[in-house]
Length: 166
Image (cartoon, rainbow, N blue to C red):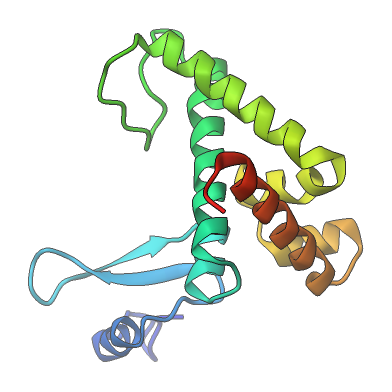
């Protein structure tokens, strides 16, 4: 996306991209850094892309974020953390011991998935937890992207109701 004729990033195009606030087709967004005139490329999650494009509401995004947080802290943390440290990207400010917090996250995750049911969780979990794009999931399910997106929206609405953010 940012390659010019010589294969290097074109700063003018990056600046236009930042000012336009757009996201590339492959989920890359350009953000300004703390230092003037410097930019960085960042990969957005599929759910973040859907929010920025207006395909889902803020409450749907927040519900998806809460589900992902519970998944990363509880499920992923339970699988590959032996010493009790936090999974990457998860911040915890203390209070209860980490194993207690992790167990609570697992419980919240299981309750949320149970509230979704089989049909909705079959779409919500790959997009939110595995960060699969809706287009790829629709192809895998052999259905139209619009149908998969509609199921995702229903699932995120259900999650928002479950978490109380709807």
